[in-house]
Length: 607
Image 1 (spheres, rainbow, N blue to C red):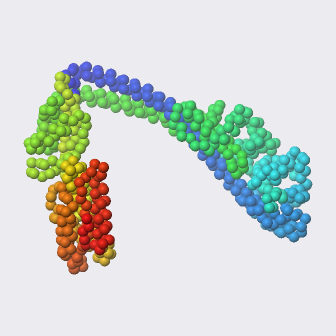
Image 2 (image 1 turned 180 degrees about the vertical axis):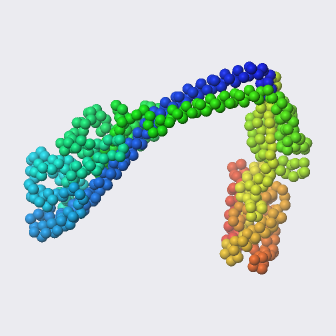
């Protein structure tokens, strides 16, 4: 065997071989862990910045939504108000003016800080700011493009940043068109102080930087407020190539990706699909702000090691150190056990022979090399292990055997091959048996009635079906159901029902006495009986006997100090199995007959 081969060589040669093997193993592990470290570090950094920027993007998006949510709700209500619509459609009517100003003032009182309301009616084009008339809109001027855009090209609302020379104010403007019968008749909106917006939205608790710009590239949020007030384009703060890249990535912001764990090239494609982009030691992520119809750009400086990435090197070093210590200890351990190897070998054989276990060792020719006394006693009744010993490879099966005391016990048989000594033929084997009769009994038995449960009944029925198929012998099934059992449970309770189930199961078990037959509980109050080599006539006789025996039996209920009568209905089916069928067809046919019996009045047999 293997240990005999080792002891056939000198101790020093074995130790040199072990040392060389350990060194090669350590070198391979070192190379593998270093490669994994570099790859993991790169992927972790990529994932770290993606998660960090997504969190920053989500937080900032929610902050912007919360900042404008009340404003948009108020303007939505105002733009759809009948009083506002009527005034915009007919501003010269005194009645509509009165209703409008009354409602306008009530809305004005709901405005938040740093917000001023404005409105323009299409008929007169008068621009009112915070209840005061300011000027008439001249659509020919280039700086009034927002007016035509809102009335004629906007269905809901739009955002823009403009400096109004008549007001001498640079503000964020929210414009809501007002429609009357589908036609725009004016607009109503808010002017929001840009300094307060930057003060609240521009602040950040982390090191990320935020930029908001619209589809025309105009900056709506930047740490430099002059860029916003001067309506600077994003190209003023970022290179044109980066801006083009961001617009391209923004189109893919909501696309799903399934390539996150592929090679670097695949990882880069994933980053672009997710809106993530790395450039010049910076990480960028762009996404849309639907509420403003704008883009949010988040950026941060990148580092080689971030978060847990700093621990990767320490962790890798600890693994290598632990592995080195383990190999040294293992080497010393091997060195220590080589000398007493023969002693342990002889001691193992002596103990094994007397150990209270069923174990046997066979050589390549199938002869017994070592056997425990308990296995020897078991094999004295016949060499029933031959079929397993001759098979190659690992086996783990359970089988029923008759032991020396005449009982049928279930054994778990585990067999594995072993390497032979030098000059030996073939491969030896070790076979180990453990008695699992009790476990099999518990697994196959219904805990209440102590007869076969549904799983075991189906297994036996399947086996017997194919045995009958090979022998071309009839196989019969009886389906037995207790009549009115639900009513019985409702009247006497489930504990009394359990007593009846036990008694009926005991009765069925006593009346089916052949070892090849089987009684099982397959439902709450439903039992099944399998009769080997029994035709329909024979099965019907058995069913009638069962039906009569249960009808005559008195079921005593101790808790009620009374006896009751119980009847059963039985469905019978018998036939010779056909290759295209299986046992479930037989059971189903018997169940149909059972249903027929119950439908015909119960306490009868149908076949």
